[in-house]
Length: 237
Image (cartoon, rainbow, N blue to C red; front, side, top):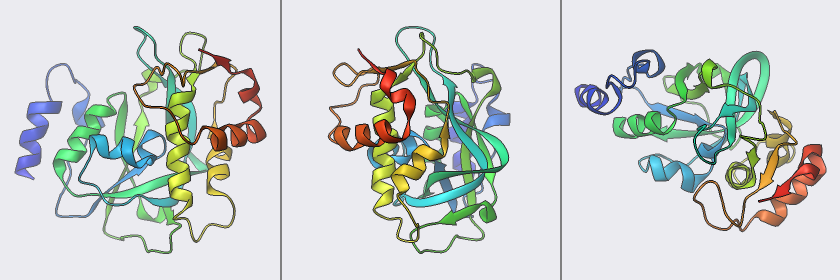
């Protein structure tokens, strides 16, 4: 715990991060710590680039949150509108639940998700879909985007395919582990996501986010074309 606080003071609690105490609560590493990913953190490579000391991501349904494209990116340069969540009691989202083994990885993810606040989630809101049982004494965290960073997609900050590809690849990886889910987990990812927009660009050739060519493009496009009407408005960038 002392080590975590030292890291927090050095990395996160500078004057530039005035909301860190509110957005990033203290973590008791004597309890098992878990992250809940619902966007790019669902995808294995994306998550472990930031937090390498995490366990296998398990598919889950999480109650009490609504996922939507409502988190605006940087207004300088080329950016996008990212996924965020708001607390809605009757809503449920697909998600990844993964064990976090070091405080350093929590600090690193806090820094990555600097437009979001880390919020605790009760274990009884989570249903694992791989057949395993939830850890009752675990501490579960989800990143909720800050109110002042919320906005719908626009021509200036559209949806971009490279980011959606990461999200959907994570859903595909989790679908292979979702043994207790009746239905198609990838489709459920789409159905539990709101905020799709006609402001949408296909940036696969020149990604606004620095990721390589997407090998799952065909599968992702077929699902988007079938379930998301706005996909027909996508323009090539």
